[in-house]
Image 1: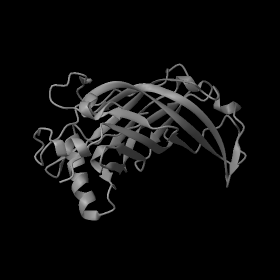
Image 2: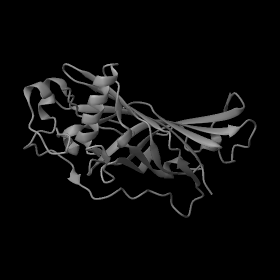
Image 3: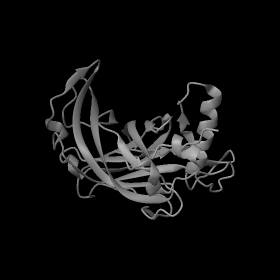
Amino acid sequence: MTRFCPVVTMFALGASLAHCGRKGDDMRSDPAAGALSASKADPTTTAWHFAIDPGGTTQVDMPGLNEHITGTTSATSGTLDVVASDLAQSRGLVRVDLSTFTTHTFGDQGKDSTQTKHARTWLEAVVDDKVNEQMRWADFAIRGIDDLSAADVRSVAPERVGEEDVRTVSMTVHGELLLHGHKLAKDGAVKVAFHYPAGAPAGSRPVHVEVHSRQPMRVVLKEFDVRPRDPAGQLLDWTTNLVSKVADTADATVSLTATPVP
């Protein structure tokens, strides 16, 4: 049966296949209990507060030796605090629901369904058809921002798109990725589009914000201790057959929308 080493997230994601999380490997992240604490903008600044819409997606690409595994997640959560006058001070927490991870490798419903079940079990997001709340979420906490195309979104010339004005800023976000109970520092190159009603003043709050990866976030699976497991979630030994199929890294591309909250 086709097995799979999957992983997500948010936002900038190799190593060789021989190192894909086998027993005895030492290069892993430190275990981290619970969810990451959300980063918030400095309370002395004026920030726009946004809630991430639940329908955000992640595209996952895993090129193995004999199989090129592809998949998606279809649910998100989290918050963004945007400081319009100094975007580098913006902060946030993006959460990706791994229990929704679904593979599309074969284009065959039966094979893809089997691979999806294996993937969710390896991540321990869903084990024995039960959602595991402790492993369900991949969290990325934004702790810093730089490489901005514009420091102040109000200074960006809008582009008219239908009935909206859109101001777009590219940036690099730095933070922590919590996945499968393990935490590591990660960076992500993203593009943020601020949507306003047509003709709205530059200083007004956007009606929504879109965030898209400019390049994939690369996740090395062994660093998060993602390993073969049976349907009950028990660890399995690696086999030659598994090694020939399983990718060692996952490249994740995120797309999400956030809307204002009071």
